[in-house]
Amino acid sequence: MYSLEDRMKAVDLYFKYGGGSAAVRRELGYPSKRALKLWVREYKSTGALHEKYYGVHRPKYSEEQKQAAVDYYLEHGRSLRRSVDALGYPNRETLRQWLDEAIPDRRGLRGRRSLQPKVELTCEQKEEAVLDLCSRDGPAKEVAAKYGVTRAALYKWKNGLLGKESPLKRRKRKKSTLNDDKNALMAKVESLKQQVDTLEKQIHRLQLERDVMEVTAEILKKPSWSPREHNVG
Image (spheres, rainbow, N blue to C red):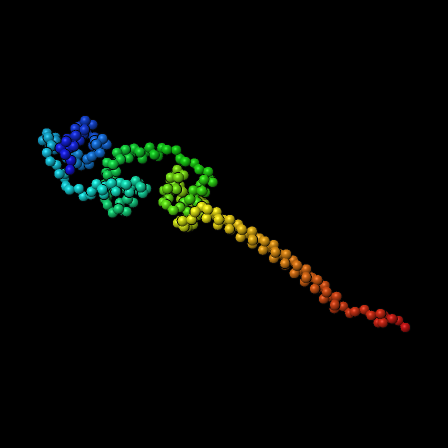
């Protein structure tokens, strides 16, 4: 409930700013557009405001609920639809009004944000960002903020490097663990190479032994030579 002084101050500013309700809310932080419209209508018709004002109806949502909705919107991707679905209240238009009241320059800030220069990262930085994305413990927006990019950019790089079908998070594995796995894999590959070399040497030796045995067998098949068999007279 607003006092007579508060309501009169809002009405005076309304006329001072040429009927701009947004300017009034920006300066005072209150009231809603509908409430200010009713105050102005009452003042125009009677030349004054009633001593007591109870509003049009009892507020459906408390100030705590309004603040919680605004905070959720700001902290979870700035999406009206997602915020309403997650909280279960209010409708999108009401939440939009709360945001306009809480952040008067919200629309202007959104327009200016799009004019900021894009962050260009090297291939190595993109790979590092994807590693952080896949091994993170917190939300993806923290990784995006770390590299100064959007979450959409992170997922695009991830799909480009690992493919869309690659499972993403959340193994809670540190980067050092990934490096250990890589080193272990390289050691296993080197061990397999050594085993292949050893097997090739063993095969070569067996082939030589087989050739020797074949030659020996051929020699043993030939009849032995005796001097008496070749003695004449």
